[in-house]
Length: 181
Image (cartoon, rainbow, N blue to C red):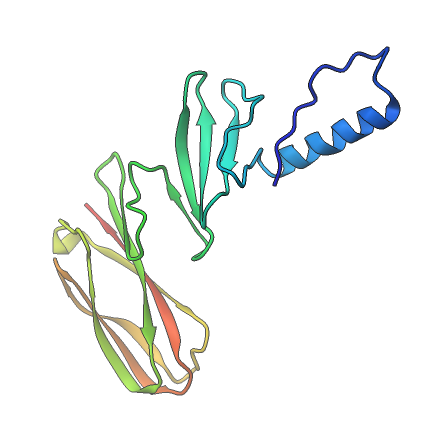
């Protein structure tokens, strides 16, 4: 992660070694997205430039508009997910994203322990969906054997019931996502 500017390169006083060092530093800055582990905008920022604040576990991707930084995206490095800018994502797991169109997305992770089947209720933290317009997506994270099945059993405006059937010999997690208007 780095930030570096080529600065002024007068050909009559810049040696080949100096130029090489400046180019390598610039290359590192470009490859890292002009990132900063301190959360500071590059001193050489220009209008339209994108840079990344990597000071926390949730990286913030900004674009400079000539006067201020606009948060375009957030990258959750703990859960390996990316979300739209700050006005949409509430920063929590389970989380909520509200798009300008009115589309709402919610997501989270449910841990399934060892046992012979498991049923849990998953809440929508801030849902105002109509129950007829909800789409669910479930994915599992490791440990699921071929004799175990999972799916949405029932849902209402408050949430849904997730049912896992089978002999669970290794605990695993299920990531869920719901979206609707």
